[in-house]
Amino acid sequence: MDMKKLIPIIVIIGLLLILIWPRKDISINIVKGDYEEVVHKDFIYNHPDSISFPAVVRSSGKKPVTTEYKGIEISKLFVSLNMDISNIKKMTFTATDGYRIVLSKEEIDESNNVYLTFERDGEYLKSKKQGGNGPFQLVIRNDPFSQRWIKHVDKIILE
Image 1 (tube, one colour):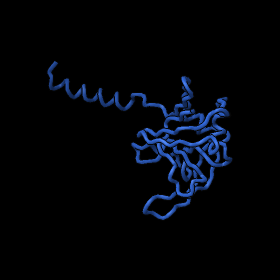
Image 2 (cartoon, helix red, strand yellow):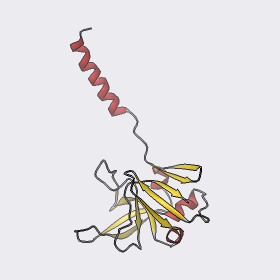
Image 3 (cartoon, helix red, strand yellow):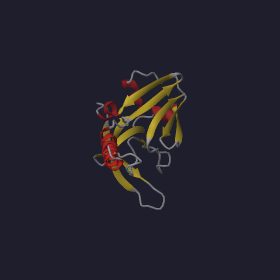
Image 4 (cartoon, rainbow, N blue to C red):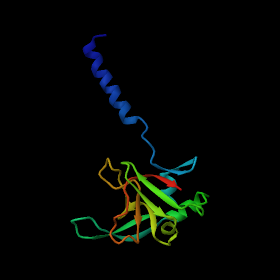
């Protein structure tokens, strides 16, 4: 076969493979010592304890914006996973870009405070690649300046 005819066929096959190749599933890894569990998006998106709540987003140089998030309180997430977090001292939340924050057990235990969110104003959070803050964002409702919120959460480490 002539090489000039073969190149367009290879390009078309390559494009088709790119379009139909399975993409990475949206999930969060939870690590406790040597144990690691993968929690898929559907478990979180369809969780019966997820709620919508108002929050004020504060960003440097911009006016505060009241918005509505939907997510699950972190402590309730762990209860539903049958993971005992009573003996942990802290949780580290890590984002896809390596950014991390650490919360104390007291902050986690505070009622209606720490939420793993997946929607904002009725729309699923978009990934960083799509220009969004998701697919998961940690919102700490009692953080008056939103300084410890973390976008693009993909791992939670229990210590």
